[in-house]
Image (cartoon, rainbow, N blue to C red; front, side, top):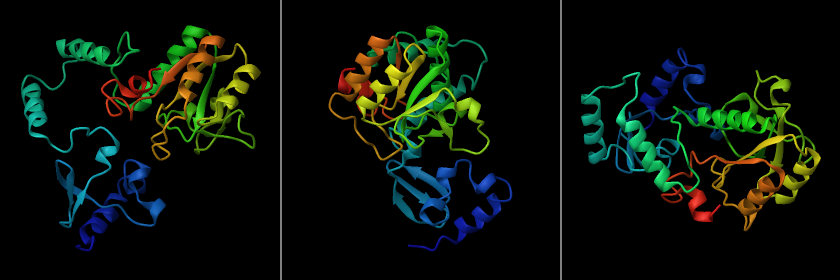
Length: 259
């Protein structure tokens, strides 16, 4: 194992340009008392850092690399697509062809809107739910991550089911005032929220498999119970499958659990 001398040099340089030296806090290694390793190449399941050390990559770019690094078929397909043009700013047949494939795989999807990040997807889903229901409040679960939109950057107060309090500097309390929290896998807590805020909750947003807090599976009956509560109270159920989609199964976690 080579000492990470070049990684440390690059990190010092990056800190002069990027906040914290990285483009995402999770890459900084600060939580584990280290400094980040800088990568130069990847192939299949393995990556190599700038100091020549090789690793089995269990992170896979935090999810998107389902096929591993630089698979030959994908590299060829990307090459063919970019040779025809990189971006048009106009409709392309690939958009609806991909949407049709997603719709065939995911049992709940009727129409598809493509966005650039999970944060945008979650924001759009909540905005749509609020517009459709005419309600403002949403329920999220402690430990579930739905991107860095202000309304999702909250933690629980002294009780298990309280109004949100921001956990990120720069998020005003007013922005998260309509965010309600409950412990993951605690259906009774969600039921209490639904009763307490009857007629005011637009959506319950949940990772069907809670990836950001250690890949925690749903308890028996939890997701089905959320579906029943939403039906009963006129609430929209939003599955955030940015991580579990196409990984838990081709039809996502909703396909696995039948919800």
